Amino acid sequence: MLNNLWKKFIHVSKFNWIIRVAVALLVILLFTITIIRFLSIPKVDSQNLNIRKNPSPYAKIIGNVEHGQSLHVLKKNKNTGWWKIKINNQKGWVASWLINKENYNAKKSNNIPETTIVLDPGHGGSDAGTLSADGNKMEKIYTLKTALKVYKELKSLNANVLLTRDSDKYVPLANRAYLSYAAKANLFISFHFNSSNEMYNASGYQVFKYHKNADAFANIINKQFKNLPMENRKVNFGNYYVLRNNTQPAILLEMGFMDNTHDLKLIKSNAYQQKIASDVKMAVQEYFKD
Image 1 (cartoon, one colour):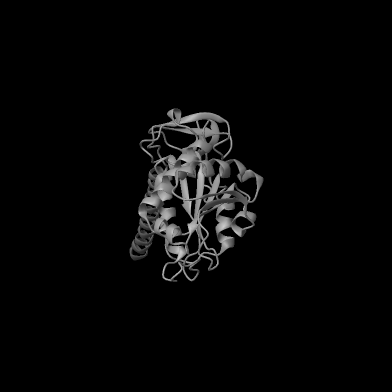
Image 2 (cartoon, helix red, strand yellow):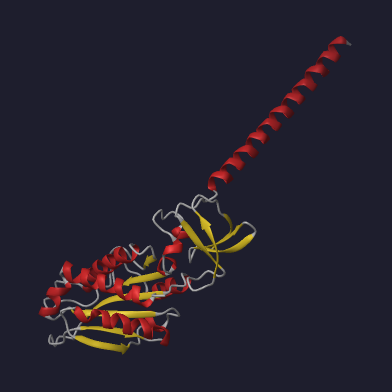
């Protein structure tokens, strides 16, 4: 009998020990989850952020988030980068790409940092684009070099700048236009260099647009390019896929002729590419001016 009681005692003790271990593990798990959640709550490193009524740089400002505050994120839009948050019982939208910008102060800034601009270096990969007269220079190389310089200039404004390609790879036209749509881009700029189809005597840069919503920026940037050492071929209608199938304000730039000796010398020049980048930056600042 004593032996049976001892066995029962041992059995109950083991059962209690298992329960205690299980409870301890559950407590540790819940504690770990709490810590992870706490550490994953984003804090504002910028001096302050605008809270807008809708996810747009044009939407009404309904409040501000100050430096060091934690954000209760209700919803994230992975395509646009806008987050819906709740703070002090107030719900609104913030531009997530500005959260960690320590030098950004919404109260002393215009709305450019809250804009999204898509840059589209034409061609790439298996699509070389137009060629120089000797066939040795490819358009795709210089569209990327120019777009990367523009990217750097616009990033200095704290804008959300996206590239349809950042290396020598092929990107379908539909993907380029879709990125603009999905990101709800405030501007889409496609970079190209022209060809005169073996005539070799055409020269100059030209701005193309398709939809009416691009008229204002097309005119502004065309005016800004007036200091370029090349003929201005004016703003014109361009029935190009990345413009035609783009719901956002979109323009296409032809910044010289690859098969023209004068133009090609400029196209290959870092100084000319940087001049384009600086002019685009100034045009953007003019376009989004309050």
